[in-house]
Length: 179
Image (cartoon, rainbow, N blue to C red; front, side, top):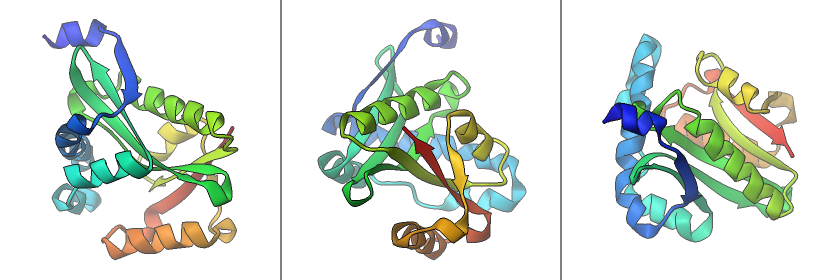
């Protein structure tokens, strides 16, 4: 069956309310990648976004899913920051069974298309700067690290939020993709 899924085309689409119930499991699977870094094992036990939180983002922002032969393989949660003319990516997760097939890149590109259609000039996100599969992946998708000295109030509040939930803030970076 995996060979069939590998060969299939995956559709990137807006999430539907019914999709929300499946998204926490995708995120739980995606975070298993952090098992490769012993210093980040604590992430495996952190809560993921609930189905209700996903539904809330569907109402106020953008939730995209990657669907492959009727199976959800990944998702992206973003929110417009109109005062900054930017779309912020809060979460990008791809189920382990679907990783390394370009779904993450396709989801990011679809978010960029949405941002452009809304007149945004950039996308942003935060990630681990020193984890081999995070920062380099986003750099390959056109994102650049934003120096801490250039953080505005919103980036500082995101950093504070991440620190409050237990993320090691010294390892986190904000990244921007200009459109």
